[in-house]
Length: 154
Image (cartoon, rainbow, N blue to C red; front, side):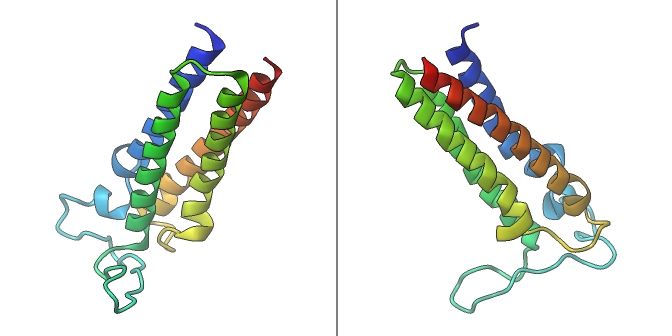
C-alpha cells in the first residue's frame, strides 16, 4: 500500500472514530443511558445554559453538545480523507494533512476547553469519552503532522 493510500485510509478511520466514540463506542451520558429509566445517573448531568434565544436547550447535558461537535468534526475529517483519495500534487496532500492535524487539535479542545463534559467523575462522558477523545486526538495529530511534513518532501 502506498503512502497516499495509507494516509487516506488512516484519516478515514480517524474520522469514523471521531463519529463513533461519543455515540457508540464510549458514549456520552445521554447516549449511554438511552434505554435506562434514570437517564443521568444519581446526581444528574451538568446542564447546558439556556440563552433564551432558542440556543442550547436546558434539557441536554453539556456532553451531548460535545458529541454533536465531534460528529461534525468527524464528518469534516472523512471529507478530507476522501480528498486525499484523488490524485494531486505533494503540496495539495501536505495541505490537506495539515488541515487534518488542525482538526485533531480541535477534536481535543471540544471536550476539554470549548464545550466540556459533565463534572462528575462517575459520569460515562468523564470516565470514558473524554480520555478516548484526548488519546485519539493526540495520535491523529502526531500522524497527520508527520504525514504532512513527509508529503512536502515529495
